Amino acid sequence: MVLTCGVATGTTTQRNGTFQPSRRGLLRAGGLLALGGVTVPLAGCDLFDRDEGPPPAADPLHPLLDEALALAGSYRAAAGAVPELADRLTPIAETHEAHAAELARVIGATLPSSAPSPTGTPPAGAAAALSALRRSEQAARNAAVTACAAAPAERAALVGSIAAARATHLEALK
Image (cartoon, rainbow, N blue to C red; front, side, top):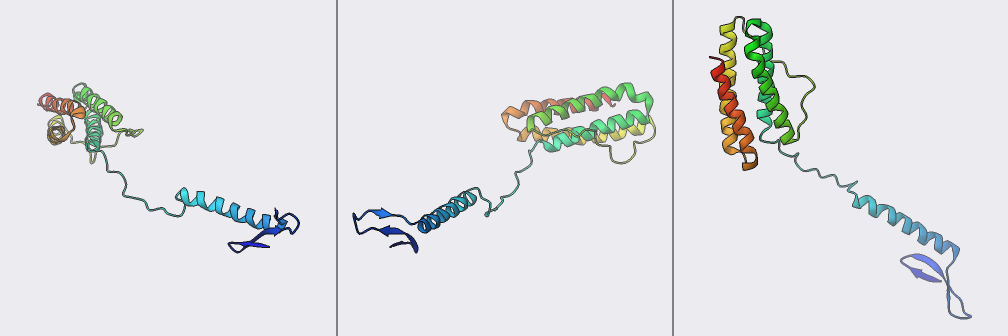
């Protein structure tokens, strides 16, 4: 009987010296091969070694997307609270929504099914609503200018357009 790696694989006959595997030896060898064939792919597919790295960093334009959605919600809320401003504020809200859609397309994000509601309640009265919107728009314009300066060339035109639109909105709110 021939012993290989602790497994009896068969016998050699005395007649012609040829190897004749025994049925038990074949079953053991097949079992070892099957076991080895299963564990190698499992180890290769990283089933046992789940060393997850850090999550991918958020896109630097994602804050602009969030701001655009928040601004659109603020304009819509102010237009609803002060109906006499609706004709003036609705086009600005639509512009922010268009910016959000384009930013989402560029960074590969999905837009929420509904616009986020603005924080707090809109100020009562036209003057107070316009003043609050000017403050929000000014902060958002400053953020867009900063993002434009830091953006790679292929994104700078988009971010610059958003910064320019926000500056225009400030003029429309005077």
